[in-house]
Image (tube, rainbow, N blue to C red; front, side, top):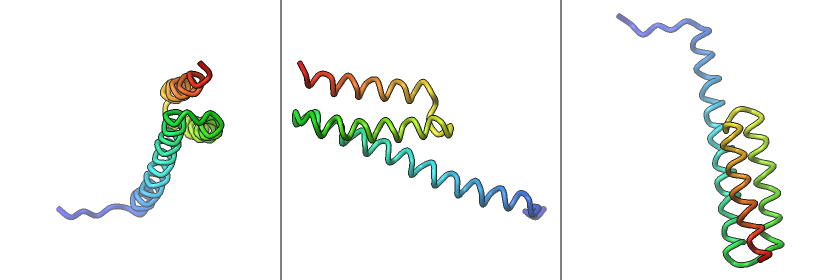
Length: 90
């Protein structure tokens, strides 16, 4: 029994691989930007934290819209980071 796959299945596999790599990149960008927010907050740098938060929120919203991250997970991540930045005021 050979592993013959029809042309449409081969194309689907190529497309899926491209999508997987793109989605992984998007998730990595989100994690990196979240780390930047956390580092800035830890250093009590409110301006840098707010700038990093803005970038992170944009990336998370894009990922949620494309279905890479679930809507509630995106909201949770944004909320936690926003609370972290808001705590710098206190």
